[in-house]
Image (cartoon, rainbow, N blue to C red):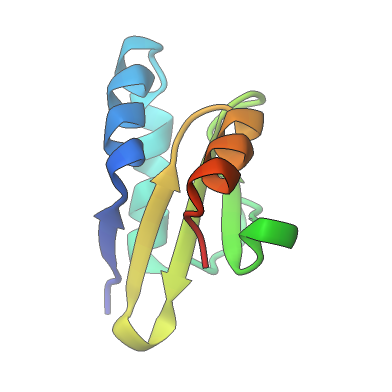
Length: 99
């Protein structure tokens, strides 16, 4: 049974940046894994803490991360950001997006 993938508005903007940076194939690979099982390991994921407690992060590459939330009861994954890790945390904290 597959999971639904939904995107926060910033993640949609990030998708355009990923395409222009040549990172779209890797991001699509991660999204495919998330749609099958957001807890699948490998590839490794990191459970975030602090203001982002309850969200998860996976590497697109050394600099870029895919940050997402899992809503198990609804079998839904919400992608919050798909850009640099530090930018994601800063933006999410500033905009109060997260669990």
